[in-house]
Length: 332
Image (tube, rainbow, N blue to C red; front, side, top):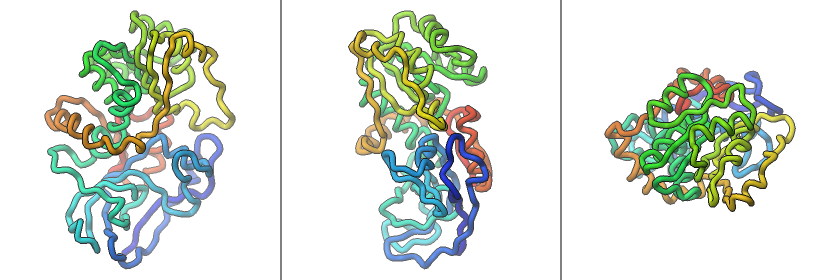
Protein backbone atom coordinates (compact mmCIF):
# COMPACT_ATOMS: atom_id res chain seq x y z
CA UNK A 1 0.00 0.00 0.00
CA UNK A 2 1.22 3.48 -0.81
CA UNK A 3 1.00 6.60 1.33
CA UNK A 4 1.43 10.27 0.48
CA UNK A 5 3.15 12.52 2.98
CA UNK A 6 4.68 15.96 3.30
CA UNK A 7 8.33 16.57 4.10
CA UNK A 8 10.47 19.67 4.48
CA UNK A 9 13.22 20.29 1.92
CA UNK A 10 15.00 22.91 4.06
CA UNK A 11 14.65 24.78 7.34
CA UNK A 12 13.11 28.23 6.77
CA UNK A 13 14.33 31.59 8.00
CA UNK A 14 11.28 33.72 8.67
CA UNK A 15 7.86 32.76 7.33
CA UNK A 16 8.25 29.41 5.52
CA UNK A 17 7.99 29.46 1.76
CA UNK A 18 5.32 27.18 0.32
CA UNK A 19 7.97 25.56 -1.91
CA UNK A 20 9.73 24.09 1.15
CA UNK A 21 6.86 21.61 1.63
CA UNK A 22 7.22 18.59 -0.67
CA UNK A 23 4.45 16.04 -1.27
CA UNK A 24 6.02 12.59 -1.59
CA UNK A 25 4.86 9.01 -2.02
CA UNK A 26 6.15 5.95 -0.19
CA UNK A 27 5.33 2.25 -0.19
CA UNK A 28 4.42 1.14 3.31
CA UNK A 29 6.17 -1.97 4.68
CA UNK A 30 4.28 -4.97 6.03
CA UNK A 31 2.83 -4.40 9.46
CA UNK A 32 5.19 -5.35 12.25
CA UNK A 33 3.86 -6.82 15.47
CA UNK A 34 2.19 -4.10 17.53
CA UNK A 35 1.57 -1.79 14.56
CA UNK A 36 -1.61 -0.46 12.98
CA UNK A 37 -2.38 1.22 9.68
CA UNK A 38 -4.71 4.22 9.82
CA UNK A 39 -6.54 6.09 7.08
CA UNK A 40 -6.55 9.70 8.20
CA UNK A 41 -9.79 11.69 8.07
CA UNK A 42 -8.66 14.93 9.72
CA UNK A 43 -5.28 16.63 10.12
CA UNK A 44 -4.31 19.36 12.56
CA UNK A 45 -2.00 22.26 11.79
CA UNK A 46 -0.84 24.33 14.77
CA UNK A 47 1.46 27.30 15.37
CA UNK A 48 3.85 25.22 17.52
CA UNK A 49 4.84 23.30 14.38
CA UNK A 50 6.81 26.36 13.24
CA UNK A 51 9.27 25.66 16.07
CA UNK A 52 9.86 22.15 14.71
CA UNK A 53 10.90 23.72 11.39
CA UNK A 54 13.84 25.53 12.97
CA UNK A 55 16.32 22.67 12.74
CA UNK A 56 17.09 22.87 16.47
CA UNK A 57 15.55 21.10 19.43
CA UNK A 58 13.23 23.25 21.53
CA UNK A 59 10.93 21.27 23.83
CA UNK A 60 10.50 18.73 21.02
CA UNK A 61 12.77 17.40 18.28
CA UNK A 62 12.75 19.28 14.96
CA UNK A 63 11.30 17.79 11.80
CA UNK A 64 13.90 15.80 9.85
CA UNK A 65 14.47 17.04 6.32
CA UNK A 66 13.12 14.64 3.74
CA UNK A 67 11.23 12.58 6.33
CA UNK A 68 7.45 12.53 6.94
CA UNK A 69 6.31 15.49 9.02
CA UNK A 70 4.18 14.88 12.09
CA UNK A 71 1.10 16.39 13.66
CA UNK A 72 -2.16 15.55 15.31
CA UNK A 73 -4.59 13.49 13.26
CA UNK A 74 -7.85 11.58 13.54
CA UNK A 75 -8.44 8.49 11.46
CA UNK A 76 -9.81 4.97 11.18
CA UNK A 77 -7.88 1.75 11.65
CA UNK A 78 -7.81 -0.14 8.32
CA UNK A 79 -5.28 -2.87 9.25
CA UNK A 80 -3.99 -4.04 12.60
CA UNK A 81 -1.35 -6.32 14.05
CA UNK A 82 -2.26 -5.61 17.67
CA UNK A 83 -5.23 -7.02 19.56
CA UNK A 84 -5.78 -3.74 21.44
CA UNK A 85 -7.23 -2.13 18.30
CA UNK A 86 -9.52 -3.52 15.63
CA UNK A 87 -10.37 -2.51 12.07
CA UNK A 88 -12.90 0.31 12.12
CA UNK A 89 -11.77 1.87 15.40
CA UNK A 90 -11.60 5.67 15.31
CA UNK A 91 -8.33 6.88 16.78
CA UNK A 92 -6.17 9.93 17.44
CA UNK A 93 -2.40 9.95 16.89
CA UNK A 94 0.54 12.10 15.75
CA UNK A 95 0.94 10.65 12.25
CA UNK A 96 -0.41 13.72 10.48
CA UNK A 97 0.72 15.48 7.28
CA UNK A 98 -0.09 12.25 5.40
CA UNK A 99 -3.09 10.30 4.14
CA UNK A 100 -2.25 6.89 5.62
CA UNK A 101 -0.23 6.45 8.82
CA UNK A 102 1.51 3.28 9.97
CA UNK A 103 2.39 3.48 13.66
CA UNK A 104 3.07 1.47 16.81
CA UNK A 105 -0.07 1.26 18.91
CA UNK A 106 1.69 2.93 21.87
CA UNK A 107 1.18 6.25 20.09
CA UNK A 108 -2.44 5.62 19.09
CA UNK A 109 -5.48 6.38 21.27
CA UNK A 110 -8.98 5.11 20.66
CA UNK A 111 -11.52 7.93 20.72
CA UNK A 112 -13.84 8.02 23.76
CA UNK A 113 -17.48 7.03 23.29
CA UNK A 114 -18.87 10.58 23.48
CA UNK A 115 -21.43 12.03 21.10
CA UNK A 116 -19.23 14.70 19.48
CA UNK A 117 -17.78 15.04 15.96
CA UNK A 118 -14.53 13.11 15.67
CA UNK A 119 -12.51 16.20 14.69
CA UNK A 120 -13.38 17.76 18.05
CA UNK A 121 -10.50 15.69 19.44
CA UNK A 122 -8.10 17.85 17.45
CA UNK A 123 -9.61 21.07 18.76
CA UNK A 124 -11.94 21.77 21.63
CA UNK A 125 -11.42 18.29 23.16
CA UNK A 126 -7.86 17.86 21.98
CA UNK A 127 -4.53 19.58 22.50
CA UNK A 128 -5.88 23.16 22.07
CA UNK A 129 -8.72 22.62 24.52
CA UNK A 130 -6.47 20.90 27.02
CA UNK A 131 -4.01 23.79 26.66
CA UNK A 132 -6.70 26.35 27.49
CA UNK A 133 -7.87 24.35 30.52
CA UNK A 134 -4.32 23.77 31.76
CA UNK A 135 -3.25 27.39 31.40
CA UNK A 136 -6.27 28.74 33.22
CA UNK A 137 -6.54 26.18 35.99
CA UNK A 138 -3.11 24.71 36.66
CA UNK A 139 -0.84 27.62 35.72
CA UNK A 140 -2.82 30.84 36.27
CA UNK A 141 -5.00 29.36 39.05
CA UNK A 142 -8.00 31.27 37.76
CA UNK A 143 -10.68 31.92 40.37
CA UNK A 144 -14.30 33.11 40.19
CA UNK A 145 -14.57 36.90 39.87
CA UNK A 146 -11.04 37.24 38.42
CA UNK A 147 -10.57 39.77 35.64
CA UNK A 148 -9.19 37.71 32.75
CA UNK A 149 -7.46 38.82 29.55
CA UNK A 150 -6.81 36.45 26.65
CA UNK A 151 -4.80 37.24 23.52
CA UNK A 152 -5.58 35.51 20.20
CA UNK A 153 -8.97 35.04 21.84
CA UNK A 154 -10.74 33.78 18.72
CA UNK A 155 -8.22 31.02 18.04
CA UNK A 156 -8.45 27.35 18.92
CA UNK A 157 -6.93 27.81 22.39
CA UNK A 158 -8.09 31.33 23.17
CA UNK A 159 -11.74 30.78 22.30
CA UNK A 160 -12.04 27.98 24.83
CA UNK A 161 -10.00 29.88 27.42
CA UNK A 162 -12.45 32.81 27.34
CA UNK A 163 -15.46 30.51 27.68
CA UNK A 164 -13.98 28.51 30.56
CA UNK A 165 -13.17 31.76 32.33
CA UNK A 166 -16.72 33.04 31.73
CA UNK A 167 -18.11 29.79 33.14
CA UNK A 168 -16.15 30.46 36.35
CA UNK A 169 -17.87 33.82 36.72
CA UNK A 170 -14.92 35.93 35.56
CA UNK A 171 -14.98 39.24 33.72
CA UNK A 172 -13.25 38.37 30.43
CA UNK A 173 -11.55 40.53 27.80
CA UNK A 174 -10.45 39.01 24.50
CA UNK A 175 -7.91 40.46 22.05
CA UNK A 176 -8.48 39.70 18.36
CA UNK A 177 -8.22 41.40 14.97
CA UNK A 178 -10.86 40.88 12.31
CA UNK A 179 -14.33 42.35 12.82
CA UNK A 180 -16.09 38.98 12.59
CA UNK A 181 -13.78 37.57 15.27
CA UNK A 182 -14.51 40.49 17.59
CA UNK A 183 -18.23 40.03 16.95
CA UNK A 184 -18.01 36.34 17.85
CA UNK A 185 -16.25 37.16 21.11
CA UNK A 186 -18.94 39.68 21.96
CA UNK A 187 -21.62 37.04 21.32
CA UNK A 188 -19.85 34.86 23.91
CA UNK A 189 -20.18 37.58 26.54
CA UNK A 190 -16.55 38.61 26.20
CA UNK A 191 -15.38 42.23 26.04
CA UNK A 192 -13.66 42.36 22.61
CA UNK A 193 -10.57 44.49 22.02
CA UNK A 194 -8.90 44.93 18.63
CA UNK A 195 -5.11 45.06 18.39
CA UNK A 196 -5.13 46.35 14.81
CA UNK A 197 -3.60 49.76 14.04
CA UNK A 198 -2.65 50.19 17.69
CA UNK A 199 0.69 50.41 19.44
CA UNK A 200 1.25 48.97 22.91
CA UNK A 201 0.10 52.13 24.69
CA UNK A 202 -3.10 52.39 22.65
CA UNK A 203 -3.84 48.71 23.16
CA UNK A 204 -3.22 49.08 26.89
CA UNK A 205 -5.71 51.96 27.07
CA UNK A 206 -8.30 49.87 25.18
CA UNK A 207 -7.80 47.01 27.66
CA UNK A 208 -8.25 49.46 30.53
CA UNK A 209 -11.58 50.61 29.09
CA UNK A 210 -12.73 47.00 28.70
CA UNK A 211 -11.55 46.02 32.19
CA UNK A 212 -11.53 49.11 34.45
CA UNK A 213 -10.65 46.98 37.49
CA UNK A 214 -7.41 45.75 35.98
CA UNK A 215 -6.26 42.23 35.04
CA UNK A 216 -5.80 39.34 37.47
CA UNK A 217 -5.13 36.62 34.88
CA UNK A 218 -3.54 37.00 31.47
CA UNK A 219 -3.54 34.04 29.07
CA UNK A 220 -0.72 34.81 26.63
CA UNK A 221 -0.76 33.42 23.10
CA UNK A 222 0.85 36.25 21.14
CA UNK A 223 3.61 38.24 22.83
CA UNK A 224 4.74 41.51 21.23
CA UNK A 225 2.52 44.51 21.89
CA UNK A 226 -0.13 42.30 23.49
CA UNK A 227 2.23 41.34 26.31
CA UNK A 228 3.47 44.90 26.78
CA UNK A 229 -0.08 46.24 26.88
CA UNK A 230 -1.20 43.57 29.34
CA UNK A 231 1.70 44.19 31.73
CA UNK A 232 0.57 47.81 32.18
CA UNK A 233 -2.87 46.69 33.38
CA UNK A 234 -1.89 44.00 35.89
CA UNK A 235 -3.35 43.95 39.36
CA UNK A 236 -1.28 43.07 42.39
CA UNK A 237 -0.69 39.33 42.49
CA UNK A 238 -1.67 38.81 38.84
CA UNK A 239 -0.80 35.53 37.13
CA UNK A 240 0.30 35.21 33.51
CA UNK A 241 0.16 31.82 31.78
CA UNK A 242 2.42 31.90 28.72
CA UNK A 243 1.10 29.42 26.19
CA UNK A 244 2.70 30.82 23.03
CA UNK A 245 4.18 33.91 21.41
CA UNK A 246 3.10 33.62 17.81
CA UNK A 247 4.14 37.22 17.13
CA UNK A 248 7.78 36.11 17.03
CA UNK A 249 7.55 32.63 15.51
CA UNK A 250 8.65 33.78 12.05
CA UNK A 251 11.04 36.52 13.19
CA UNK A 252 14.37 36.49 11.36
CA UNK A 253 16.15 38.13 14.31
CA UNK A 254 15.56 38.01 18.07
CA UNK A 255 12.58 40.17 19.00
CA UNK A 256 12.94 42.77 21.77
CA UNK A 257 11.24 42.10 25.06
CA UNK A 258 8.56 44.37 26.54
CA UNK A 259 9.86 47.71 27.82
CA UNK A 260 7.76 47.47 30.99
CA UNK A 261 8.75 44.04 32.31
CA UNK A 262 9.40 45.67 35.68
CA UNK A 263 5.62 45.67 36.16
CA UNK A 264 6.04 42.05 37.27
CA UNK A 265 7.99 43.33 40.27
CA UNK A 266 5.78 46.29 41.09
CA UNK A 267 2.60 44.21 40.83
CA UNK A 268 4.19 41.17 42.52
CA UNK A 269 2.93 39.19 39.55
CA UNK A 270 3.80 35.68 38.41
CA UNK A 271 4.58 34.83 34.78
CA UNK A 272 5.01 31.17 33.89
CA UNK A 273 5.44 29.39 30.61
CA UNK A 274 4.09 25.88 30.16
CA UNK A 275 4.03 22.97 27.72
CA UNK A 276 0.73 21.13 27.77
CA UNK A 277 2.36 17.73 27.24
CA UNK A 278 3.86 18.01 30.72
CA UNK A 279 0.35 18.10 32.19
CA UNK A 280 -1.28 15.38 30.07
CA UNK A 281 -1.91 13.22 33.13
CA UNK A 282 -4.72 15.70 33.89
CA UNK A 283 -6.43 15.08 30.53
CA UNK A 284 -9.12 12.83 32.05
CA UNK A 285 -10.10 15.65 34.44
CA UNK A 286 -10.28 18.07 31.52
CA UNK A 287 -12.34 15.62 29.48
CA UNK A 288 -14.76 14.97 32.34
CA UNK A 289 -15.35 18.69 32.76
CA UNK A 290 -15.43 19.88 29.15
CA UNK A 291 -16.69 16.95 27.03
CA UNK A 292 -20.25 17.01 28.47
CA UNK A 293 -20.45 20.75 27.77
CA UNK A 294 -19.40 20.17 24.17
CA UNK A 295 -21.84 17.27 23.73
CA UNK A 296 -24.70 19.37 25.16
CA UNK A 297 -23.88 22.40 23.00
CA UNK A 298 -22.94 24.57 25.98
CA UNK A 299 -19.59 25.54 24.49
CA UNK A 300 -19.40 27.40 21.20
CA UNK A 301 -16.42 26.35 19.13
CA UNK A 302 -15.54 27.09 15.53
CA UNK A 303 -13.47 25.31 12.92
CA UNK A 304 -11.78 26.61 9.80
CA UNK A 305 -11.53 23.70 7.35
CA UNK A 306 -9.37 23.30 4.27
CA UNK A 307 -10.00 20.21 2.15
CA UNK A 308 -7.45 17.85 0.65
CA UNK A 309 -3.98 16.70 1.69
CA UNK A 310 -2.48 18.97 -0.96
CA UNK A 311 -3.74 22.02 0.96
CA UNK A 312 -2.10 21.13 4.29
CA UNK A 313 0.87 23.53 3.92
CA UNK A 314 -1.46 26.35 2.87
CA UNK A 315 -3.64 25.74 5.92
CA UNK A 316 -0.56 25.87 8.14
CA UNK A 317 0.77 29.10 6.60
CA UNK A 318 -2.67 30.71 6.88
CA UNK A 319 -2.35 30.51 10.67
CA UNK A 320 0.18 33.33 10.54
CA UNK A 321 -2.19 35.57 8.58
CA UNK A 322 -4.94 35.14 11.17
CA UNK A 323 -7.04 33.34 8.56
CA UNK A 324 -8.54 30.90 11.06
CA UNK A 325 -11.42 31.40 13.44
CA UNK A 326 -11.18 28.63 16.01
CA UNK A 327 -9.30 25.45 15.07
CA UNK A 328 -7.63 25.16 11.67
CA UNK A 329 -8.21 21.69 10.24
CA UNK A 330 -7.56 19.79 7.04
CA UNK A 331 -10.22 17.32 5.95
CA UNK A 332 -9.14 14.35 3.81
